Amino acid sequence: MYDKGAVIAGLAVFVVFFTFPFWYNTGSAAYKQPQPELPKNSEYCVESKEWMRAEHMQLLNTWRDDVVREGMHEYQSGLNGKMYNKSLVKTCMKCHDNKEKFCDTCHNTMDVSPYCWDCHVAPKEAK
Image 1 (spheres, rainbow, N blue to C red):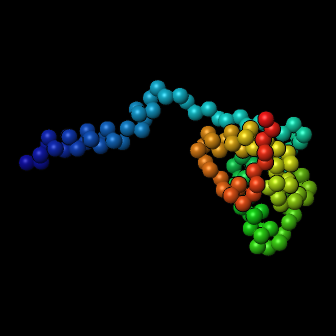
Image 2: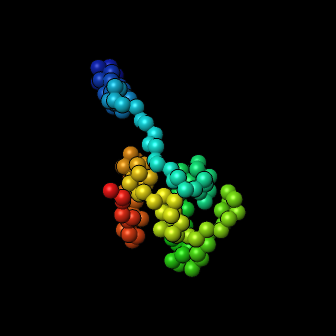
Image 3: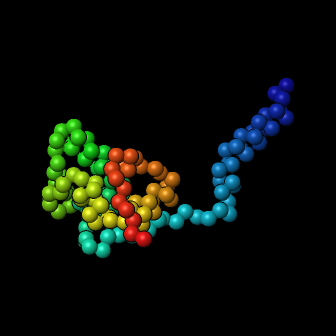
């Protein structure tokens, strides 16, 4: 009356599809957090390391909009109160001078292709 066989088969298919991501990754290598090369000539960034790790994308987008649309070129750090120039090249890349060992380390691990270098000229890497 309730077609018990079809219900059990449906439940089995559901369980297989629901658990597929878990058993598909069984035995694969565990995620390892990338370790980008930190600058040697600077002790701190415009904000804390943890904040920059989580929020740098939003910060750079805000800086871009502020500079291009509003003409506001200075940023006051919440970390130390210092004023910084809102510039990827003049501020960020001044300390993080090796894009390959800093930016690309995380972006390649996360399979992210930021569009920063669509407008900015990527720094030439030392050979």
